[in-house]
Length: 102
Image 1 (cartoon, rainbow, N blue to C red):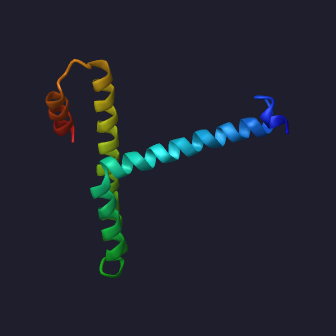
Image 2 (cartoon, rainbow, N blue to C red):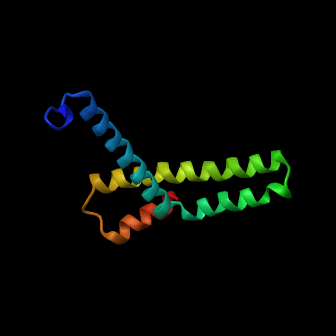
């Protein structure tokens, strides 16, 4: 009852916190599907190799793929920051910068 009337109520704060977490999760999923779909497929294929590879081989494949994903996330975020700072670049120039960083 109070959560609908007062922003400071416990339920209201909890609901806002959950809404923020849901948005972060949705944004992360959208980002991964948009920018890392090939790497997600690699993770799936690594899982299918479990019966034919040793644990050490699987761990190496997993670590390599995870490193690529983290690098892509880092470079994409840097590109987005550059795009915001220098909005005068043409679309082609922005794509060229992005491709160089990947």
